Amino acid sequence: MLRSVLFWLLMCLLLLAVGFGYWRRGQGAATPPTDSTGTGSPRVPATSRAVVLDGVDGEANTQAILAAAEPGYTVLLPAGRYPIRRLWLAVSGVRLVGTGPEPTTLYGADHVLIELGDVSGLVLENIAMLGTGQSNETHYLGLLTARNRIILGLSLIKCQFSAPGLNTNGFKLVADTPTSRIENLTVQTCLFNYLGRMGGEVQSHQAGATTLYNLQFLGNEFKYLGLVATNPDDHHGMAISVSGAANGVVIDGATVVDPYNIGVEVVGAVRGLRISNVNYESMNRTNTEAGRPLSILSVQPGMFSPDFEFTDARIEWLMSSPLDRSGSVFLSGLRGCTLDNCFFVTPDGWVALVNCNDNTFRDLGIRGSSLYGLLIEYAPGRSSEGNRFVNLRNDVSRSQTLYDAVRQQGERAQLNYFL
Picture 1 (cartoon, one colour):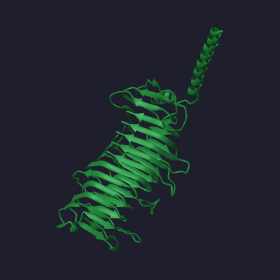
Picture 2 (picture 1 turned 60 degrees about the horizontal axis):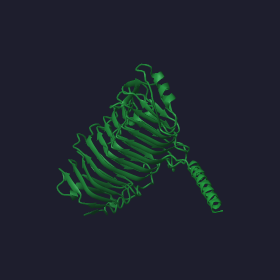
Picture 3 (picture 1 turned 90 degrees about the vertical axis):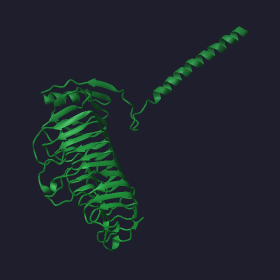
């Protein structure tokens, strides 16, 4: 009797163990891992595909890359230089990676080498895009272009952009329609070198609509921009230009060498603006044709948001080396923001504050040869008051005292504090 009881007790324990094992397996299958973007879609196992490229046939190279680019795949591009026709890339979850010690160069004579459709989770790494054509015709495009698309996650890492003879940007991403959107853009450790137009431009010219989110420019280098001009009013060569309504813009660790007209430009209703560790090594070419002043940095609301005020902007550790031409810093529409530890060498230029109120400027250094180093002014119906300047360091050779180096223009630009 006792042996019978023990036998059935052991059988029950065995059945319970088997059932628990099946239950655990079912639990694991019920919740597959999700991707890192937080969309909840299952993660596709990362798989690599090495692509063989031809040194002559651009069409064959374009088709080979497209054939390998499937969601979840890393497409490995061989070291070397290869022609391509315009590559239409509209596949999400793809990484294009150059495998050599130097970036794999994709080149062509067109203003655009890669055009994006609606994509998410797209990565381009260790790839150089070279525009070899010669044309000053303006298309308002870039070697990498997206026109009114939905971009949810785009990373450009250790890439290079060059087109000395074409009136084109390194990249241009546009979200000018209500259905378009650019979110989670990362441009990191890239080189923008000898470009006919701008380095990188992100644009949303919609009144009252925010279509740009979380744009990060980290540790990039910009050299010799704006080399091709169509007409004076359209001659631009900014290192970085962000225009329109945006939420979260970070520009950190940039080196800027000889852009055209403006170094870094932020125009529009931008919330969460952070600009830091930008070093200007040279700015020699101002737009004398259109009579526009040379600006090291330009931050202003812009035509699509004239009444907007930057309320959470922070600018710090911006340095400019001796410049050969006049260079100004133009700040407009700042309220309750901070600017720390910045030093500007601006021969015949100045730091201009227009319609800026209740901001704090700490350890601001200005060196130049103009009549004044700091200009504070206002537009009709506005004011530039309540700004605090802590340890303002002026070294303007024509000014005798610190107060002489500051020009407060207009009765509504007088109530500022120098500590």
